[in-house]
Length: 394
Image (cartoon, rainbow, N blue to C red):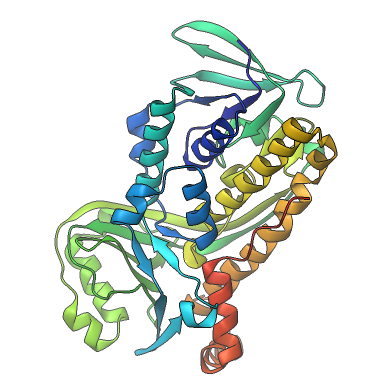
């Protein structure tokens, strides 16, 4: 079996890369260990930067997003009981974000790939890249009990933090940067109307809270919990009660509660690996970096990786610009570290850290007060939240 680009992983980054390459006439095959239903069952982020929205349109999968997604011109910071509005559109010369769940992005990309006849092999087991640092890379896998070899020009590792792609690079080649936070987010999904027409990020002495949404009738709420908390200890009633305590009184009074349809605890970590490539193997998304969800950057960073590799490969195949291949990692990392900084900053500003002394607590509180009280500060928050521009590939 042969293709031009072998893509490992059929999450949103792998599917988006595959769709863009297919539209550009570059053959690709996606290998995915799980079933389509399993992939669609992952509950993930739902805030899309304007750059990702535009990239989805370029891939030809923006129609349902426009019809069902929610354009947000701003969001609210609830700081110790008071609301501060961050007007994204006003502060960034008209830029906005789109609230549209990762599951729906994945569903749209799956449908588009099926409609155009591009190949995705689900339940491909024991996937393994080989000879990445040569001119003849290939990937082996097992499908329906048969061992298959897939020869290719390039390999895109879109298989997540625990995937095989990064693990296939010699350890001595990579440098890892990591911070594990001493808490997690307990999140629930519920078929209830949102408490507010925009997202609310709440800083409170009891811990962080987030009021998000997937649609006008489905909400996603989070509260900060200790890293060792167990789902079994959190009834719906306990969750709603705790969420109300962390919101300003007016929003708490308006909160509509109901039975959860999904409940989970997500640990928080920052992680970056350098470089993001090894020969003909390129890492994208969670395979190369993780951000705390506070800044809504995880899925969006994966999209910016896709944008970079896609545009490089188009120039390689159309113009013979193989010199660009060695620039992939440095281009991606410039944007990644800026997003890591913003996510780290938002996490530090809005969460409670038990080991912070009184001076540090007061400094964090004062820094947040300064930023939200200054137009320049609010503009800095806004331009990071809507997403820094993609770097032009020349």
